[in-house]
Amino acid sequence: MLAIDLQGGVDVVARVESFPMCIDHLADGRLLVVASSRREILRQEADGSLVTHAGLGGLADHPWNDIVADGRGNAYVNNIGFDFASGDVKPGIIALVTPDGAAREVADALEFPNGMAVTADNRTLIVAESFAGQLTAFDIAADGSLSNRRLWADLGMGGDGICLDAEGAIWVSDARGFALLRVREGGKIDGTVSTGARYAFACMLGGADRQTLFACTSTGSGPAMADKRDGAIETVRVDVPGAGLP
Image (cartoon, rainbow, N blue to C red; front, side, top):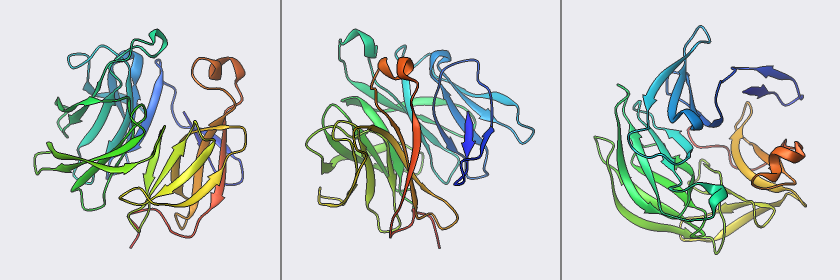
């Protein structure tokens, strides 16, 4: 795993003996890594070592995908529900991982769950359902359970990685449309950034003022990405910073 600064400097953060699918940080700054092929979440300690944060094998045998941590020490991780290469599409789930490493299913029947975000008040989880072409929201209970499933925004198609900004809008990586979309609750799109002929798979607001939108892009999709080896991190400045700033 790599850390890349705005000047293009690259540092190796960790080496994982598995496929490191997605990452997020706990409130105390420790890194969480979805080790998809091991069906585990790993946690990086202060000394740089990686330890098992939670085992996921008892919940699903198919690939684990995206992760998001809230401000209370909980993490949510989703499973797409089928083997991507097989084409035999089945619904996926979301699992809750509590601070003690216990994991349980908290949502099901998701059409390829992908990017997720938790609002700053820890009350709402939003997930992109890529094959449904929509963003879906849930209320978060005190124990981390999810309820009141509802449509947050109809995208029409696609939807991959997502992130929230300080106005409550969501940036969505639209791989099929070769763009990044800023979407309001209800589905209004009030910002679009083209990625040319490159697929956009993930996005995050960062930088010193959280007004740099980072996007992970590639000219290939699926297994073709490994063959092309032309993935890149691209940036664009935006007006509204990421959620969580004072």
